[in-house]
Image 1: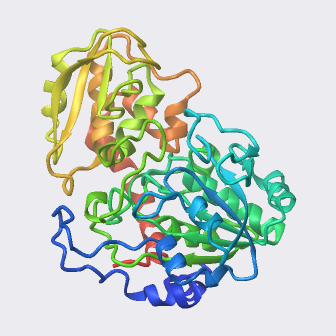
Image 2 (image 1 turned 180 degrees about the vertical axis):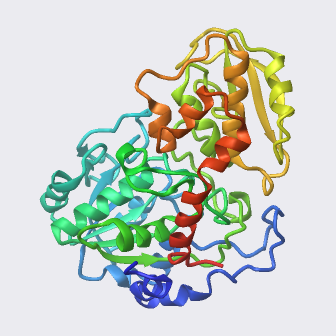
Length: 421
């Protein structure tokens, strides 16, 4: 616990210190109310960095880890903005999963090439980590690595582990590391869900954090540096102003850009920490539809699932009988039956609990229900507990109760790294 909340703010120099009151800025916005024209808008880390004339990066050759979400409020990409500004020397771009410009589907990168818009070299960092990634940073010739990617708020969304890998590699390569903060789109109120057991570590979960972490990327960076990295990164965080932990994305005044092809809206992000667990089953998680992770289904499921899910008494959500034909992925081109989630009270909604209840009811109703052979449910949930308990006939309350002690321990650690009120 080497980097406390105070340490994170101080690490940002003038910009970070100025953000000490970030939690109170815009406090007049009512909880749950949509953003109104003229209301206080969240100022992202990049907004603040550029408004300050990039002084934090003065005299440095800069490389940026980013993707299509790295945009200004008027949806210009930060790489294009920085490349056109002689106050900053941008010399390289590093692309994560789906690529820098976002042309790759899940499980792919764009490769290493020259960006046609700017002429900058773009290095593919997808599935590159440790010393090989440090070698990429060294080969690029940059002095400072800047990270600016919109997260979705779930442990198994890979960009937060791209952050971890890049911090580790920057430390190995002797490079400065700057995180430009953006909102957690599903609020930062609390951490929920099971905590990863390190024997199940993978690229969808490197370290023991909860399934819905309730942190921003700058807070996660401080957590990584303080708790998990053997060699600490030379870390600076440029925090936001105007963001509060209770804010949903539509309250920030910022534009939503798809962080990945199957994360089309903030509504997707809201349900994703729970319904993404269906990736570990033979039930469609809605990939190949306009509402991935909100639509779930399989051949042989029907209205009975919506009734069963509704009977679970889950807060803030209703279930509609739904039929759909995915354009790709599971059941491609075939009509399946299932449910659509309709969240009517997003502050009461518990995505992870809802996902567990849906798994339990689907297994009970769908005679062909099966887990993926690669034990992906353990990879996604961070241990073999969830799959084992569901197979043994446990109910939703029992499964959720099983991780509470570990969750409480993580919440205690997490609190030390929270910046915003």
